[in-house]
Image (tube, rainbow over all chains, first blue to last red; front, side, top):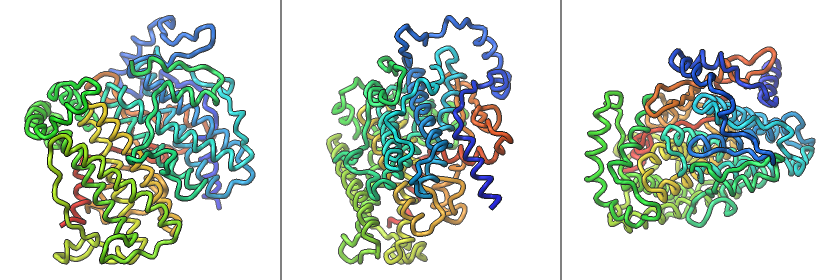
Length: 244
Length: 305
């Protein structure tokens, strides 16, 4: 029994909305002396040099090149993590145990993905990272968090969209390390997608909605993905230069 | 760590040695497939070997090698699932439930589609398809040695285990193969889009096994029950999967930095804080690790003679 309780509290931590910024100093201490020196240089840069200045209409540019792809992934992972955190905070009344368990575990994975990108961009391009998306930037009003069907449907949409997003962004990634990282994450998203689909309808893990007649999963362009996600966002994201 | 650097280096070498393809030059690129095996390889080998860090663990592949590997794994999967479903003469269908059959039919159908697509690309490129291998999924090499899975044609649990191992191996190996076709956008995307289908299949097979009582999650987890004796080809499919160190570098060939998941990241905001071990187990689940082609071909070799 005590074990179960401990697990429950472990899971609960991942569900908290994490708006705390990374403590840069301790982060760079961990990263070692060389990185620390670089960090000092970079943190000496004026904030004015941040290329992601939010214009008057509130649109956030995800940026260009590899950093644009990382910001794009970071935005999607923030969206997913926030959704799962909300599900954990207010689980649907009619969830079966396996469903509640699914959301507990995947909430952790998505929070880890989000934090990974935050760390990677903070380290590699500290002046170009997009802001943390707060509750005010998100719009989950179309999801009825009290109903199993609504929540599972939204989870399916997020996971399938994530898979198509990574598949379509691969060609824009220039640095091999980043492509490997994206590959490590996208297959876990695909595993999630398959499982949540099976929870909704057993055997629908790779049906014709997502896999075409050549046996290929979907790939979507960044702009298409952001348009598809815009229903869940109050803030506007500009993906037009991602990877370019 | 070194592995990531190696991949980065190979990608650079590939794009220079193979001459960058303009987007849309798919036919031209494929046209070179046949010669690529001889033309591309020496350049890659020499280039990579000149880097001391890569000596000894080199894996280089031409586009043709990659397509042949994908075809080999898909054909193997097709045969495994076709026999399980009773579609191959001489093999009785396994006692699977109707729901299990439905999902396995989807997987089998997509294996067939993959074989067809990749075969077309190989022959369009001027290369020849290899002869169909002979399969023995008991692992006895047609009676030449003791069977590894003697009841695979009668016991759904054994069959699903082997099916899962093959899929998880494919998911890991596809990740490294993308590197070798990066100069060709069409092939890269084809591989990425196949890779996530493989992951969907793996997830479903794992779910089926869990529903039958196996200790296994739909994603690879340190909590999964081990599937083979340490050191065997099957166990090597999961070697390194519990890695919880995710590194990245700020510059090409720059020093790699580990993401401090267990210490300073905001992920750990609880009071009292999570143990670092508890976080790292979840980190291991959240990333699928790449593996060299040999991990998959070694497993395929168990069932081919």
